[in-house]
Amino acid sequence: MKYRYNIQSIYFLLIFIFISCTDKFRDINTDKSGITDDEMEIDFNNLGIPLNIIQQGIYFNYDFGKGKNWPYQLMQNLNADMFSGYMHDYKPLNGGSSNSDYNLQDGWNGTNWGYTYAYILPQIAKLQKAVIDQYPSVYALTQILKVEIMHRISDMYGPIIYTHFGNEDENFRPDTQQEAYTAFFNDLEEAIHILTKCIQNKDEGPDLSKFDIMLDGHLSSWIKFANSLRMRLAIRIATAASEKGKEEFLKSLNQQEGVFEQPVDIVVVSTRNGYQNPLGEINRVWGEVYMNASMESILNGYQDPRREIYFEPCGKDAPEGLIGTYKGIRQGTCFSHLLYASHSKIYVNKTTPPILMTAAEIWFLRAEAALRGWTSEDVGSCYRNGVATSFYQWKANYPEKYLESDSIGADYIDAFDPANNIKARCLVSPKWIEEASNEIKLEKIITQKWLAIFPEGCEAWAEQRRTGYPRLFPVRFNNSKDGCIDTETMIRRLNFPADIVDTDAPLYDRLTQALGKPDNAGTRLWWDTGNNF
Image 1 (cartoon, rainbow, N blue to C red):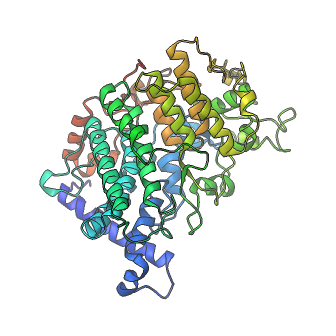
Image 2: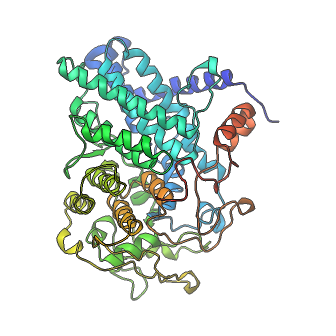
């Protein structure tokens, strides 16, 4: 029998889950003898512990009592990380047919939505309510974190419950994606204003630097992050709302604290306080994260020096001729063997800090903004700065030589099944060509940004959908429901979690109304207009 709950019931259920997992977090991450309410007030533990939970909830590795690593695999690795062209599992999941060939698994693809709303967003709401009057700087930090978390959810699904989360009077009315993005910009503007005022008044609030596992605890660093994040979102809406995008981009470019520019300007989830990279567990312990064929084509074709940093070569157990080479797995081939276990694994381990944003990304955003005429910066200079910044970040050699390369992507040759072979799709080189068309210039910018922001699959997938770049290999077999996904256009989003249909049909109806199109994975999001200029 299926039970239907009203909105209020679901809200209280989420709060109950939230309280339970907060208690569990304290049990696991504090003295085993327990911690009293009075002790929670010491050294701002009452603020720092929730801040830690929120930061761990972005690149999800929060222990809610049922494991810490498999949620990330379902939330991101088996969708965005693969759909972005970065990674693939060597195992024939679900008998060989699953997300890889667009036979989408609802039980996997609803987890990002479900865990964010059940565990992380309630934590944000509770912390903001506790600090809004006494500690405005902490409130501002949570505003920035809320945008960082929720833009990823919106970029996967589309409409989200954002401005009315927890507001029973509004019955959890969803925002359209356009409304959500407007709210993101407003929240970032508010946060930047608050933090700037705190710095000017020399009232930076409690010192939470020991709890800050993303930056250094300094408010100026968080303003830079907010400015850089606003740039990211401004470019995202470049064709859906160009004037709004330009306005928001220039706000960040002209804000006094500036944006990320140097290789050391990077946002990661630090592992220094006990956080472990879930992708590292899946990769090193489970052995389930390998190079994607699209990544192989571009890295090998370019002879990119970052290839040896991002991936391992095939080992001694590989077939003759593959040892020492870099090999990936093509998406959507419905293989039913384990032979791809000999292919190239990703570099990440459990102590590798997950990357959320780099200075290289910001230079490529600036390159695209200049290409669109939003700024007077030189497009080619910003592009070259982006490539060089990425090389210096990864300690790769000779960016100058790379930037003179005319190489293009390499054809993909499957090690075991010739039917999976496919000609290279990426036909642009790293070399900047001033005389090229704007479309070719954009393809170069986005292809290099895609390489630079690795291995952050959420951002890479969003930008690949928005622009069509880099040109990825299509699936060989397309088993999407009712053929809803076009093979060449590729997957555009994740459908809303199937359990919402069963537990709250009115909410599902409101979400689909906000989407305004069929709730399937072939539907384009608001910012995904299908054109670049």
